[in-house]
Image 1 (tube, helix red, strand yellow):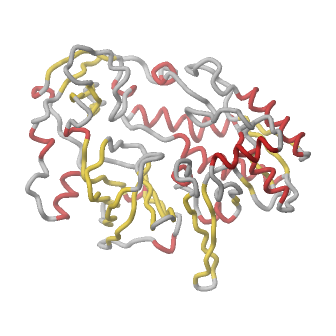
Image 2 (image 1 turned 90 degrees about the horizontal axis):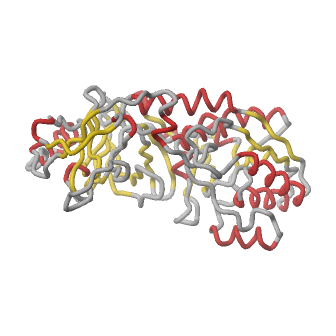
Image 3 (image 1 turned 90 degrees about the vertical axis):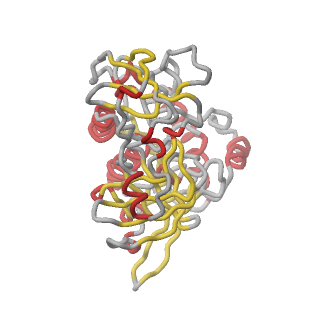
Length: 392
């Protein structure tokens, strides 16, 4: 058994629980990033993490190894980030890191050490059922609703789940801290890492300027009564609603007012408030749309601006992923589910509708800040059964 020991309290306690359960545990630390361009000073430096992880392994008396996966991480995660931002989309590197690194490249490294499974400190659970004499693995939400991390694993497949264990998914965070303290682990009071997976907190414009050049453009404020923001009013037919609402706003700058300038539309994301550097408005300005071709950032006043809210979204056919492959939907089928479009968002009632274009998700209530490039994950009660990249 290999535990991905990160230098944090969660993986430390996971390692302890595995050992207590009788597993022959080996700790493996991932080095995934060396470049500090754009990273905020002092935030989650990997050398400190490595030292702490090694101290934990000594305390638990388990073998410790490290592996440098930075080349794979750059290719599979960071390059993907640059590509998505260049298109005006906002990627989720943590989801990609789990799919492409932790449960792929790292898993292969663990197998080289003779491991049958890889364990992590994620707050989620795994169970299995038998269906037609075949084991089906279930990805379930963690018991701690405030820390449930199943969303970050929404792109895992059955093969990856078959080799994975999540030892702390049945615990709450405070219990994990208590266990670490009782063992005098050096991670007991260490703060949780934040920011981009294995990179840490970043100054996004500075980070992206490594590949995306600055280019001056206009920030255009759109009025709340702009026609497209209410274009679904009066539409009753469900099919028409999703087809219209899932299309990007056809915003035209002539309806708005130029409020300032920016250095590149690709540096912004839907729903963003900070970084616009524009004052004087009665209410705060929020990003409601991006036009990469014309390099325009569209904003609206107030957190209730109608441009921030939409009833549905589209996931293109090739971007649909089923954790539970046995539940794959056919064209024309629909299914009531619970959906999450960002980490820690409360699950939202919605309907999946499979079309030739892909998967439409029609929400019971309008959602704020639906962001292309992010992942939508759908659940059947506590089980995450599928996900996809939001196209529009």
